[in-house]
Image (cartoon, rainbow, N blue to C red; front, side, top):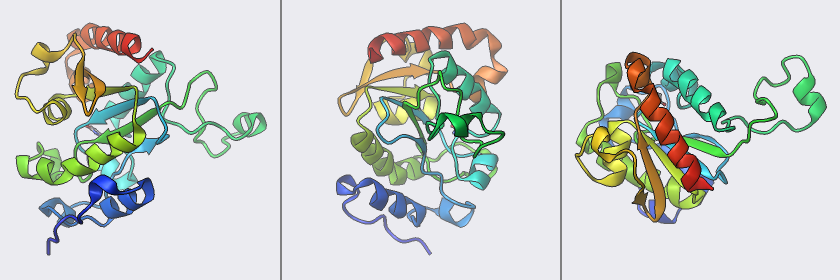
Length: 216
Ligand code: URA
């Protein structure tokens, strides 16, 4: 059975928000998900990436952008010297063979938090429904309020349209700075789209460069 989202999401601290999302039953996606996907990265990050929704692998792993699109996203972030991975505790740990496996190359900064508009996977990766976005939106809003990033990179139509409350296509929105809750937002294509539309990669690169300028 569905149960309404708890009151006061906009006042919750990070652990309470995490626990609330993990047990959310506010829309029908709770019946088909394996688990919720809250986000990954440092909650103190200066950069925030917002995607669409978990896919099959994300649903299974409980982490956003771990499939093919996620690999491209990681490459895009690395080009900005950013990584989702937590910093390694010590140099020796980082040097150790396969130590924890979670520490990224040391020249990359753990300064990005990655989240999605929807915390649950839509069946067969269909598009998010307006009602699902509406139910989930307060969680992302609170994540942004708590992270307080310097910049948000909105990737793909659903992130862009739900953060900016517009139906304009990405092609008409990219190339300039928008705002969400006072935070600058740069709009760009979704990495899954870029995997199919290689000719758009140059534009995505321009968008990343703009984001770098704004984040400085
Ligand atoms: N696509 C998204 O938008 N988010 C994910 O987490 C994975 C793929």
